[in-house]
Image 1: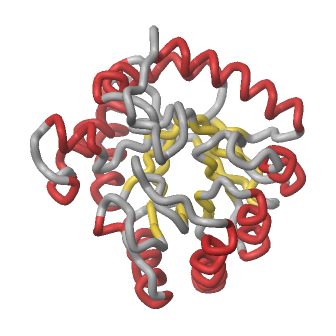
Image 2: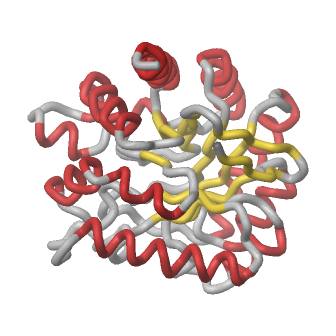
Length: 278
């Protein structure tokens, strides 16, 4: 069991949780996750919470391979009003901001976010780590080789699991020394990794339990699924459920997904499976 201090509210991770993805963008890789009008965003947030999401992850720019990098100002224009609206209408939600900019993190927390989800592990904005420590919120530490614009151009590892684990060991220690006490680790499926790398990480996901942090699995509708099956992201819900199930069996604590209802069903069946063996 893990407990995360989210601005005075405890997020208890004593069973797998679901994080719903709400992209306030026109260009995220999965069209079903794109929402730009506040009313549509609120409707999506309401449905995700009804379906069982504990965390809502709001993102203002696409970080898909080859995506265009937005400025912090542009990102702020997209995310602050939706964050304020979600916080006002759904006070029970734990809101996460998906950003690698420290100024966006700061403004987002002021608007109601209580978790920072940074794909860059502080490598893009050098002020991010000290900012998260000052804000005193949980930090999602993700592994990425390269940057979104170039990360899928021949990623290479001698041993992907060992290298990602070594990265986490070093970074978690750095974060703790910087004053960040609550860390969630995310192996970064699809971020500077081939399909083979992704499957190897999923197969070895249980090794990350040695970090004593919740492990987040973010593989929903990604190319590992649709390229392996020769389908599209739109047709990848079944494949997502399969890989989420494998992830739960290998120790995932949080499922980051586009489809909350199906992810919650996966969690409930997994829990029933576990209980049957006791």
